[in-house]
Length: 420
Image (tube, rainbow, N blue to C red; front, side, top):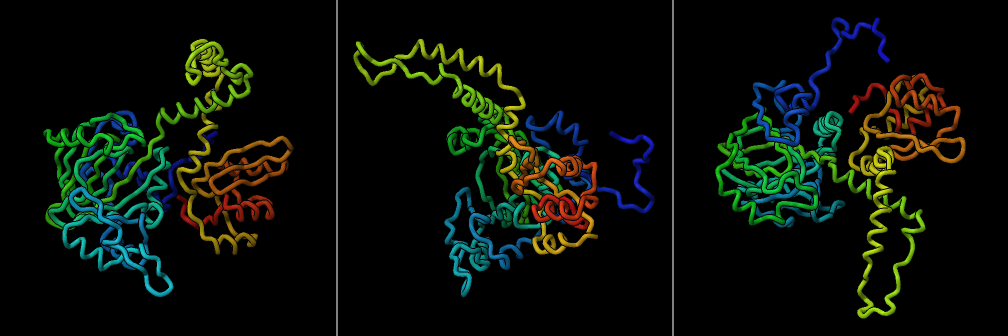
């Protein structure tokens, strides 16, 4: 409930929030993008129509840092040339004394392959590079779908991957250099995760010979959105090109189908008619053949009834585990968290990205389930914790012992830590 007497405008001199993560990628109000573009058609937005470029997220210094100083291992990196992925041993090496794992990135081998036209892909930057980690968490919150981020580093006049499509939506953020993109319509609209382009190589190859629907050069600060399934390829132009690809792993109606059928199966396990054995094959030849026309009709009727009885809330409940596992909660500093948990004066706030919900047991206690585990909460504490989760109570106001428990459970973090 909003107090209409409160002036929503920031105080003079107070910092004003910047554009949302999604607003940084599309040159239109996010609501218009959601209604008119999302999952429907490509969108190319030029840097002049966006709030700022992407240099704060990534760049050449970040590439050098990750390759030479972070000890990255496969599969956090791969390399490709002319559509073919290189063997890991061509760009990795052991780390020497005390770090003899053999698949760490070797800056010397990466340099050699880049010099001969290979593309370097730094994968899962939403886990390994702090600015991208922050941005991807914000974007996932804006979209309501989990995201991953890869960087593609391509030498001049080189192409890492041939025409293909992705099974997730993508935003391409051009960071440095220029790349020429060719976009063609799908050969399979809205493909699922188990329908990759490799299953349709011949169709993709034929489509790649047709005139592109979009052929454009991306310069620093430009952003290209592609729904899953749209064919694309790109070639770096005059200088080394670095772009970020934000993959949006969309929740689809197929996820609802699977969740719904799972609930139907669970319901029918409690129906004795669905559990009955099929008839014996007495008097029939070919005893290994099941003749079950009558049983199929009966089961269809049972399934139809169960489908009508399953509520939307049951389907949502079936997806909770998948939703929790698709992303991680906001990062926290383990040592700072431990130290400040015992400080009675430290201010706190709710940790971002918890995806928390209550799982009421049979007793008086309630169980709070989130991306960081479970916490048993007594009946006298539940209301206070629920108010914190709903954003209507400052966790700093909680009883010290309860606040300490929430801190050590990773549900709240120090208020001076930037929220994801």
